[in-house]
Image (cartoon, rainbow, N blue to C red; front, side):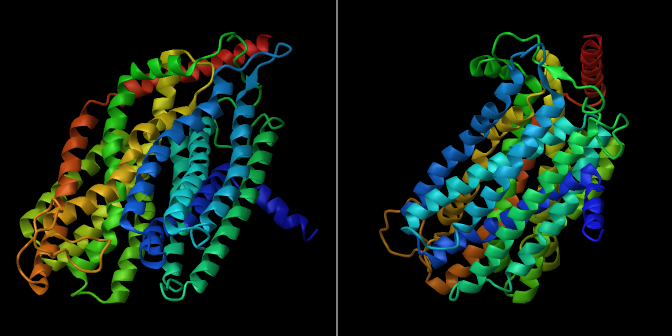
Length: 517
């Protein structure tokens, strides 16, 4: 009895809570990875500059192409499933396949996370292999987790509900950033390694437990006509929704790409999202640098650490408010408002200058919070694109993971361009090389950036000024580009309601056909 009660309590958790908890087990690893992997290889393992750039370049290619590759391998069977004995593939089977994939790839993600923190190969080789291995499993986890958002729910209300719990658990997972400060020490790495082992074990076990619970909930829906506790409205309740039973020909990748090239809203969205991904990772990569060179003389080390930790937690908490606005005004209007807010705050900061410290501190924090908040909301837009893709191309089953993968193919290069372009711009303007301890000052240097003639102490204001212009001009440029591309996006308002209605009618018609058979 004592053991049965906790198990029954876990089985009684709402599906939205179990789905959202998967974000927790990813976030506790990924935020620590983002914050420390560069510093670990540059400061602890002493990777050289060429090896770093080679690793980032290979990572750029792998990071871009693994998303559509894994998405195609995942969803190809759903697009062209062959009938066997008069039965096709059910929507519930699609969901169960994604849950099973998460149960395998989640623990493997945790293992690949551990490979960063123990030197087991030359620094350049380890940097390359760890990045590609970790990103491969992270891609698999993200694709299936995001695809479930489109597969478990159809209405905007239910998808927002699922995303709400993702944001809530992501905020909880971001607390690992605060805890990491107690263990981070470049001179003695053993305590930080033990901390990372604890995170990896917790994440791996969490993935195993959550996927088992989610699998049981989906299987139980077949026996529960009312689907109590399930926030799904896309055909998982009641009768099996068969897909692919009338589709005799396989959909080739070339045919799918041609369909996608005619998807106007998809093209405008990825153009906007490429800029957004660049800006998000630019903020993540250079947030510590901005704190150090713009505020370090005016705030304590502990205050800077708290600001850095809050910058990882606040976007998720703030996203809970953004989601409530989305329910009232729609995702399109909220995202457009965030772009305008980013542009307005950046122009205000540019006019105020770097010496208004209170405003500068507020801008550094709010810039990251609002930018990350926008990134979280865009997942909902991709699920709407999944619906439009299904309606436009008359698919039997939504290609959720594949569409998320194609979005990543175009947008993920921004993740690699952010640190490369940022370090190059800073070095070009100030002569400060982040891979060296001192500023570059040799006369007659072959480097293509200008060398200020003043001695090292007089160069500090130039470095601070360079950081300031980098801080404000990047969001201004990003906001202007995004406002233009987002104005061309038409999947909102009346058109979005029409697409939702057509997909709902399609699902009901297919379910009716199954019942008649």
